[in-house]
Image (cartoon, rainbow, N blue to C red):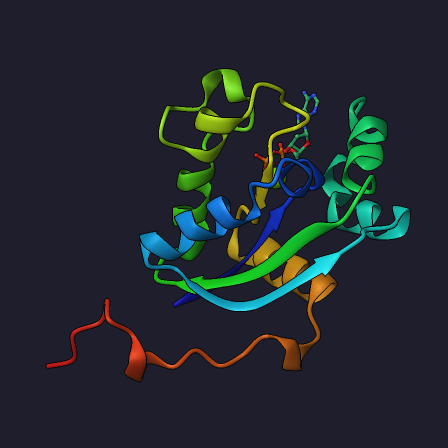
Length: 150
Ligand code: DAT
Ligand code: MG
């Protein structure tokens, strides 16, 4: 089992797509183990996007990501990191396949609706930026209709 951080970015909240995007993760069978509405500030943006701080697009990225509330989620599942990235689609919506979030709903590389951690190390680091330990709940396998115990 893996945990990963998913952000429904300010454009998703503003466009009223939160329900639809949460629904896509739920229908896939991924488990929601933490969720909150967050307004990122500059300091958090620099920490979260540490790998991009020196890139030319960082200023715009930071302005966008701090521009309004976003939904932060802790998502759990087998291969959750890769599954979320596949559901999101390519970073540039021009290359994102139909059926993915970015393929279906986005036209701009900046306003691309979702974030998903890209490795187990990033997931651990990023989850800690948005959630205290006790804000991520233990997932109850006993009630999971996707799991057949023999
Ligand atoms: P991803 O969000 O798919 O992990 P990333 O980590 O490379 O992509 O970049 C983080 C975010 O930064 C991305 O969602 C949108 C923005 N971004 C990336 N490359 C960009 C570019 N060339 N121009 C503008 N924004 C960019
Ligand atoms: Mg990334």
